[in-house]
Image (cartoon, rainbow, N blue to C red; front, top):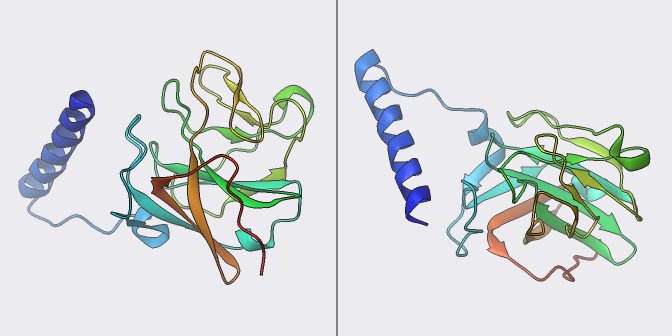
Length: 187
């Protein structure tokens, strides 16, 4: 855990140094438009996944068997899926080397659907109910629809996190781990 704290500190110092050297304040980032800091829970404690809430526009309209992925930046992303039991959310940051995973579309994840890392419109795809549903494009780890590891090098599942339906949107809280069995029912 100390290494992560050190990395965050160094990134913060670099940002402040750049701002002071340039004589300007930092402009709002795209991340400010789709996410907000969250102190509701302990966080996920891996990679540099920040304790943030991510609003995924239109995700409450997912049909059974669909998934959507949205990334705030290179370290913080969320997946929302809907199965016959309801909606659920996972961190979309691979537990192996911290890359953003893709929703697979097609046999053996042959056609991953990637989301841009700038809070761009999220990408949606049909969720595989058997075999791999999510693929890490960096090293090839594959995950089932529930986030469990099917193929390494990842050794840990994608963490389940809390979410809420808010009108047509879904708000995912990456500070609040939850049971993989947790589902949210549509209104």
